[in-house]
Image 1: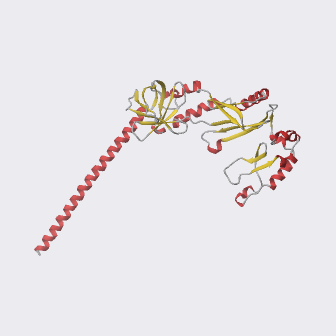
Image 2 (image 1 turned 180 degrees about the vertical axis):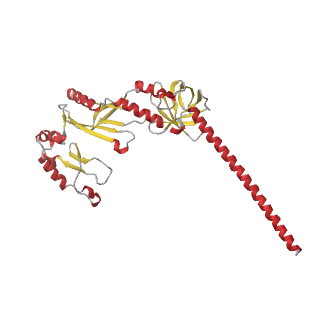
Image 3 (image 1 turned 90 degrees about the vertical axis):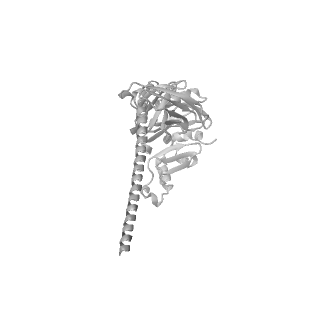
Length: 370
């Protein structure tokens, strides 16, 4: 009986010891987790404080070059931007995972430089810019523009006004289409296309017509509004994509596309038109005027429209068609939707000859391959 009591007492003591040990381990784990969480809170708080200290607009120098820089509030994303006073072209800055490090990106998205920023004060930023190519290091010294509602982010007057005053430099690009040279000038997102050619009178007339079609009286104002909003949201100057380019250029004819993709609207924001000119006279022509018999064309299209069961909604035929041409014939196509049911037709000039109007027959010889 006595041995049984002693056994029970030993088991109880052992259980109490294990319980005390378990409680001790749990206390240490709780203390460790609390310490870790505390350090994490400190790290987040420090990063947030550093970001808050950067918010606003700054001016100073990168090396010997004068720059203006901005950093958006953390709520708008961990990003910033800067531009050289002599170029006035914003360059995006994005905070990396390394504390105090910011990376600048070029138009292709590649890293063009790295900023290492010391702990900023309320009035000054110091740091170092480094080249990713050869490690060249340049000092960065910036001073805050007088704090106000006008200098709170990258879309503010303090950062953007200088950009809008001059709207940057005019860039000139040289291209060619089918061996024919042309240039495209861009300023404030607006495009000007200039064709080159032997018939100076006709070319000048066409260039004037292109300039009139491309000109949007509200274009610069819209560009500035889009850029300002994008800088405030992303510290990146995203604006609508505008293109003016020749899509077909032969001995006697040139077709130019006027393309506009409104920023923020996805595929639904895309619109474009085509205009065609006679290079001998400088007069604009409508290629649809070359087709005299719409009944014959409709019959040909109906005969050559083959739609599978997956395109049941389009069994009634095609929608509105765009007409493009080259020396081989014409292409008729619906507005592209990305669906396999989009219709596109090609007719050679010989196929089209019975359907031509008087204007089409007059142009027939100049439209074909020689």
